[in-house]
Length: 239
Image (cartoon, rainbow, N blue to C red):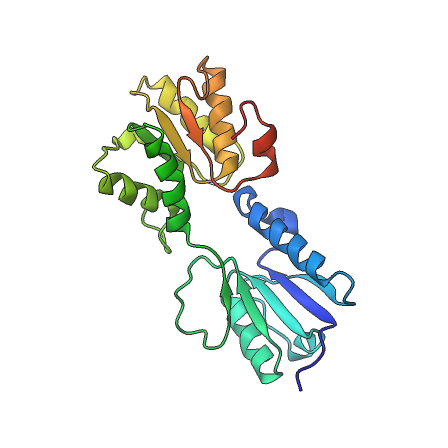
């Protein structure tokens, strides 16, 4: 019979939870809260564990836990899965960057379709009458395909042009989106009717940059974010 769950490892590729980039914290914190809430009252301990990409996984450490929830997948995750299988410990990979890994036989992947989610956001903008739409997010050409690439595919499907200056690069660093939008405005580039941001944090920084330039949101430029974070409900205007 399978072991009773008493200690579950919540595994992150980070030294501390606060080391996770802001755009990733949202889903991770929600996941950790949901897991802890589900196990509350069942005498199951959820332990936050950090592993670097090169950490060796000690079988004695694996023996301490009855199951593992790994946030995404990296080098140490594969070693962990192998050790857990030998000890008949179940593993789940949550919030993976891609959902089509074929080499994880028997390991459940729990995540969401970034392209489908981006399409919902874009459909909302297009159905609202916007045609000149910009995107602020990570660069294209990364693996797996990004929300930025989903944005361009959807715009192409609707035969809507995206000038190069409207494909705005902004990383996960705080202030990256703000400065990218300010650069767009300072260069006197043609302005879009709406901007899709690949995270709510970037959407909030975009709003701040536009407002600092004297533009009104959404009257002058509409903003659509992605994540549904709590701060988005209390911003001015709300996302």
